[in-house]
Length: 66
Image 1 (cartoon, rainbow, N blue to C red):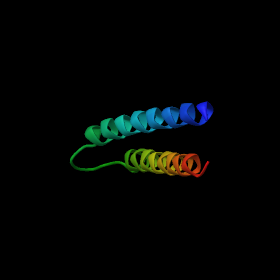
Image 2: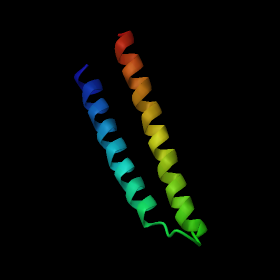
Image 3: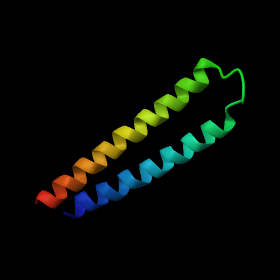
Image 4: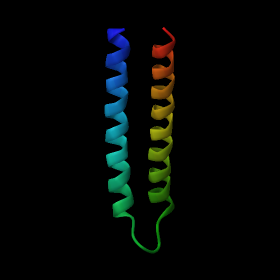
């Protein structure tokens, strides 16, 4: 159970870090003429956040099933 709680905290921290990176990336986007690489970086962060959130949801669900 302790390992599950540690993993949960680790995932929450990773999500928070990724969300901060995403916020910084979005803030650095120019108002016009956004380059494809810039949008790709934003999309990759969004995908990573969603994956971590799904992993966290699964972990929490599994924890409550124990």
